[in-house]
Amino acid sequence: MDRQMYHYATVSKALQELSEKGFTTDFNLEEDRIKNHCEDFSIEHIYRYEGESDPGDEATVYGITSKDGEKGVFVAGAGAYTEKSAAKMLHEMSIQGRE
Image (tube, rainbow, N blue to C red; front, top):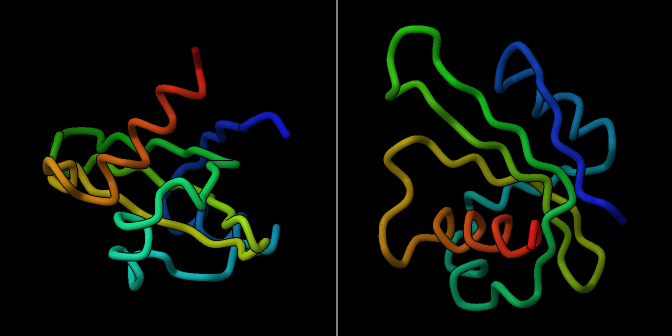
């Protein structure tokens, strides 16, 4: 399946739409699972939200699917991209998928 990038007015709207598409697991609660087994996940949807005035309001919402078919979301704020974070791994996966 081709990855889709959506543009919603807010992060909460993106989360609502993804939930309606079956992406119901909150992978932010399972960040170690993504960090330790990133090869078990694929990114299906990416939504980037940029704050109007504050760069700190930036966020990326990932709709991801595990190898076993579990669908969920991961929300990464602007400061979430540390060296070994799940957000950084998902970001790198999204870049590799474009090549």
